[in-house]
Amino acid sequence: MCVRAADYCAFICRSHGLIGKINAQGPAYLGRFYHTTFVVILGCMCQLKFCSKFCCRSTTCLFFLLLLLILFIFSEEIVIPKKKTWSKEAVLQALASTVKRDPTASDYRFQDDPYLTPKTSSEFVSFGYQTISSGRNAAKYFINTYPKYFQKDYAQPHIPCLMPDTLEAQIEEVSEAALIERIGMRKVKAAVDLYDQLLQAGTSVSLDVTNQLLDLICFYGDHDPAQENVPEQRNEETVGMVAFFLCFLFREKNNAERIFALLSEPNKHSYSALIRGMVKYGAYSKAFSTYTDLLNSRLKADMHMFNALITAAPEVKEKYNEKWELIDLLKQMAEQKVRPNLLTLNAVLKALRRCGTVGKSQAFPVISEMKALSIDLSLASYTHLLAIFYKPGHKGSFFFILKWQFFKFLIKWVHELLGVGENWRLLGNDFQQNIYYARFFSLLCMMENIDVMLKWYRDLVPSVYYPSSNVMRDLLQALDTDNRLDLIPQIWKDIKQLGHANRQNLVEELLTLMAREKHNQEVQESFAECALDIKKIYDTGDRGKVLLNWTAGSLSDLISVLLAAHRRQDAWDMLKLFKTHNRVPSEELLNKFLMCVKEGGEVNQAVELVQISAGFCLPGTPKLIQRVQQEFELTEQQR
Image (cartoon, rainbow, N blue to C red; front, side, top):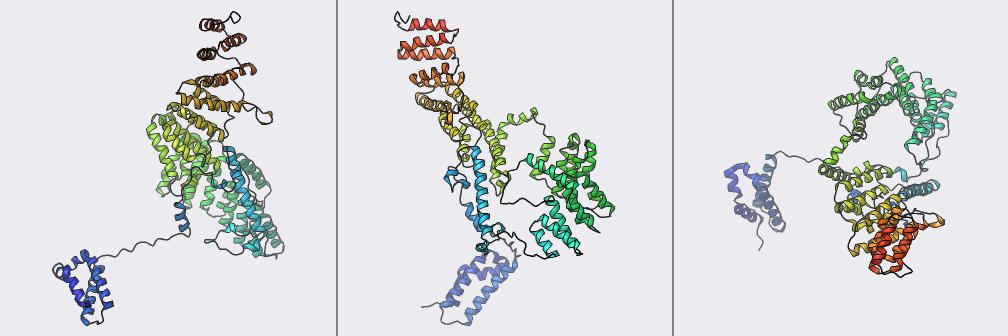
């Protein structure tokens, strides 16, 4: 039999004592029983759905419960949460967060072509550069050669680099619209030529378009930008040479000054573009002269103009005090009511790096003023501060070595910070990443125990970092410090794979560590195999090229390793190389060899040892002869 909704509602209210408690305690009780109210309403609605008769009593109970709910809702303030705006890449980012890096795999750039899998740090840099550049060039070639197949844009959001470049101008007539089109295409020479044609035809060009043209010329230095699909390897030296050459062009013959001179009433934007271009390409004195013309024209400079002038200030004067007078353009910014920003702070700190003691005295006051304007320091700001105050080679830097526990914590903290969000972008290019990981591993070798060090080593090498020979030497020293020389054969395999087997100092240090102490037989056998593998590196390589040169120390260490593993015949063959390579064995090595010969009872080898010692005219030859005569049974001929 179907229970009516009203009876069910009344039953729920009575069972929970809701009506009596509300009458007794008032609306304050509602907050503690809002869940009960929801249950009652849902129960009533479910029963009403199946009830064949909907009476007035059912409606009254339901209305009563809804009223209770409304009273509860309006009894407290409603706090609407802020709307969460998701980016269009949120799904991809969520999926990417579920995938972790495989420490045993190569970098993603080399996974498509196993032939390009690098084995050395130099190959990592060159192959990585070639992979990216060749892939970009191939993609650009197909997109620009067959643009008709790439007209539809499916990417959300829009990715401009995946669409064909508009290489040819669509507007052929001489007009201001055509000039705007060429400015947008970054065609500097074509835009300047079209501007001259407009002036020759008597067509006036608006000031806004002229300022856009000035921005283009001053940004690219009055020449067309390099093609993006032809990447260039640039370093600081080449950049400096190019900047010097371009500044000469900018000072003597440039279209920016010519077009600026044609303006009847240049505005602040015009001056800003010209001054920033002069600073960028080295015309520092002209930049300050143009700034003076701006003030004489009763115009005010903008923030970008001040930032450029502050950067150029140390290049104009020689004395530190004079440099600071020019850097102190901040007062003029305050007079002209121009609010500085973070770029202003970094420009001042960068300029103070060139001011010696004046820079040290003015750095913190500048920072205090900027903090008063709610400008916080960035990583670049701290970089400039370190350059201002740090003294290279100062003994105070060893304070951190003494506080190694704190320093060890700091290393891990900095590296963990690198994994947060997109902080990995701060590493920069491959060269800067290599510097970071080299210092990271060097500090780990110095501060951490070998187990922690090897954990990081196996996790990052070679999937992320290809260590240099200096880092591998630090690793060998860490093995020696923690008395884990049994791991040397494994490290030797990595040394060969990383292309450091031709490093004379590294190989000799490895041999010295293996030969210094005696270990159990299993470890000595692994050392012997490693030593014989090293011997192959010393042999003549391809095309008759000698990779490494034998020294007396390397020969002695290698023979000692073989003798410790009871490889007497291999050691005997190595002993002959002293004469081949004009090296002199030590008396200690010959005595050690004599002990091994005695254990084997090889009288002939003992006699030959004496002959070898006499052949090198070693001062210990008489003692060696005496030992052989006493410890071996010699024939008359051998005596």
